[in-house]
Length: 552
Image 1 (cartoon, rainbow, N blue to C red):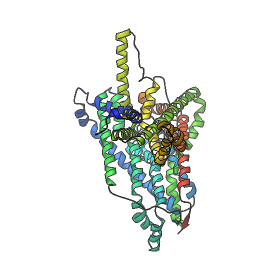
Image 2: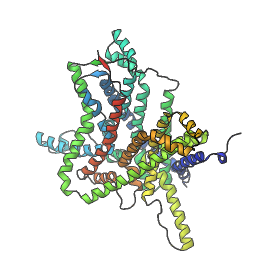
Image 3: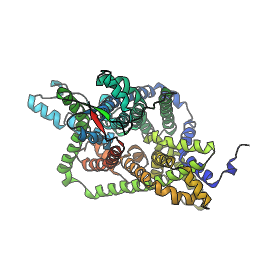
């Protein structure tokens, strides 16, 4: 006899209801999309949908190719080659991850636009009078957006492929060398196929971040699904149209995920490095070492060093005119939101992971898995899915209060930071849940059995056994959620209360008013905060990487 929901234990019921709560945006989007009085879907197909689909596909193809080239090549050179500067570049290649796409876009717009310092200097040097006298690539274009996102997203691919190369069997590469095969042959025929799962995951993460990007697309005037949702909601006040665009994007993401998983169906990769076997490293010299150094320096310089240097210079130049009271207010708001969300995300993620571990019911596991998809959703989709039900709740309570007591209750939820925190949790709870689930997977169930045999209940077991063992994983998850909230732009723009700004929204506001130098202090603060997970990732990589190599 199948178990009913009434037979669920307290942990089952708690986990299921919590998962349903954070799955609320999905349901609200479905209901709102179906509520349109007219055929909005047909109108969207005839007007904006082809352009959104075309730009989104080209954007994903371009960023996917760019991150694949930069990430895989750098991962192979760093893990399997020896050349001057490799040890520094090993961690420096992760630094562009600290830059949100919209901030590096702001920097290069200021640097490369017609009135920017580079074109101004070129006109002075060559005596050009206006733009008709010369040609200069347009940065605010689809190609420019592809370049910007490739520079900041390739570390996803580099991180995973570098780890995959280091964990491959040293025996296979040694056998290839003994057969007289070149390093290029070993890379293409042995290492690359074995690293395919890691490469696919890294490129998929980069593409998901591309789909979720709003600030770069808005600054570069590239119309995609994400910007279309924002403009349909705020420009036309068309909630059903925005919901239908959101569902179109969700279907697009779902098809992408299914294709990625189908491409790896029934494939198994078992080659694992042995710590007793020295990993072969190809020593490069001369022109090969020079080109390897230049190739690895390119993304570090243009993805981190140059933008960071310009931000520092602009911050020094404009600090006298900076309204420090406004800056500290925005920084305080960002820190408050990030701290609250990180604490709640880690707590709820741990409870959900533990409840899912205890549960034997498929419905609980499916509900939890649905929540974990939130990280794949762009900010505007999450914001719209959260705003619609909370706005309905506020209107319902307000109408009831006016009819019953004769006064207006106003915005109880949708006009406060509560809705912002809830949207952040929908978006980033998957990070905390994934860390907790991974940590719990490393704890044997024998500990739980021993705890129960001593008369301890599930809550006491979690508190006294699991929580101390998971402290490191939870701190890491909290840091990742904290930094992501600090960088989040579109959801904050759509849901922030009146007269309430964060570092990200203020910087974006300055950028839209072409006050990019004035935004430098705000941008620099976000980048500095983003360095913390980069440092953490580098430390973890150094601990997990094999330490014994041999040059060949």
